[in-house]
Length: 423
Ligand code: EPU
Image (cartoon, rainbow, N blue to C red; front, side, top):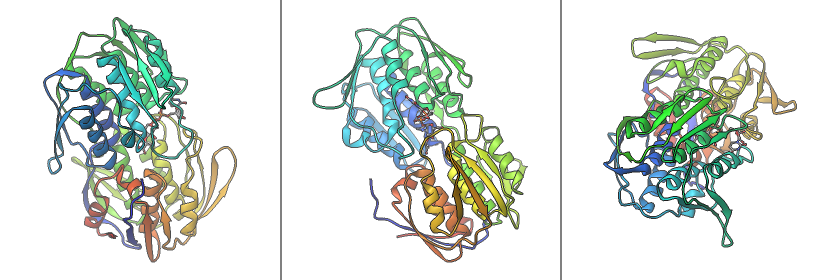
């Protein structure tokens, strides 16, 4: 979806002050879907970030018949899904974000049927969905393309089964966990992803009455139960939002303190920042992040958790552009997540394509303000970072992408002394 708004960034300010990391988008999304499983009581979620993908996910729930009371100020969502009967997902909303796939698992578990049309999301590769559908089929569902369009997933009953992901898929595991938790008997998901958002999401499901073991490891076991009830939970902090703020301090030679950085979720990323010369100092519940006068170059290979997160790769590339020397960055999780190279070149960065999703960033480049279009959430974040470091004025278009993942980013960066304006 296009957005007419533009974020203007006047570069060259060192960031100083304090900021708070938002609640995690990628934990809140599966939790909103999981609320569909409650046939008794309400689900109450705290620290739900008001990012566009989350707001659209709430709209999907409403269209299915759920009642949601979302207090934007307090960031609390109270979700009542007891009267839901609709099992067809609204096409015009699911086309906006790929995580809408996550509604299939709970609809299948609770109603034994679901229909979905196209899913949208970031254009970072072909992003297949086979693990989701293959897993549903192993639980006993029939997955069929429908003549009029879309996919029907229907089951007479669901029986616990052995499932696996060829690659550890984040939403794949979440979807299969939800599809299994009301199935008869035990299910096993092998080669599961172990991201912290999955652990947090499973913690909510456990409070709802689900029997799940092994979240956070490569093998997750689910024992089906008769029913689930609403529960209360606080969403973890967003490690990708934390990463963006940390990089904003690093690239401007800033000195900021952040609340809500869970360091154990970001070990590899933090170590890479330290290698670039960034100081990270724990001060009680705050993390101080101090950028050097000149960043050192870095080598990064993205991989599955706990490796370097693919979602922080575009931002890291922006930092590498400003670093003195050659940095190598290799993307291995998604086949086409280098769209921001074009954006960064518009700022004057020297980025040479190698092969096999490897790029050589030759720094330091004197970045200059540019007019750019954010192609996905994290490419948008890379543009913000380059804009903060650049000489002159940057205009970031297609702002909807950035808003999908980061809430009030211009307010939070402005409070740190950055010069940003949304028009
Ligand atoms: N894959 C398949 N088949 C599938 C599913 C995945 O081949 O059925 C492959 C993908 O093509 C990819 C790999 O498995 O090569 C991992 O993809 P994964 O399924 O883990 O990605 P995802 O669950 O769709 C989530 C995040 C993404 C994040 C990735 C990787 C959510 C809502 N989305 O996507 O977040 O990049 O995991 O960590 O949790 C973002 O927030 O900007 C974002 C894109």
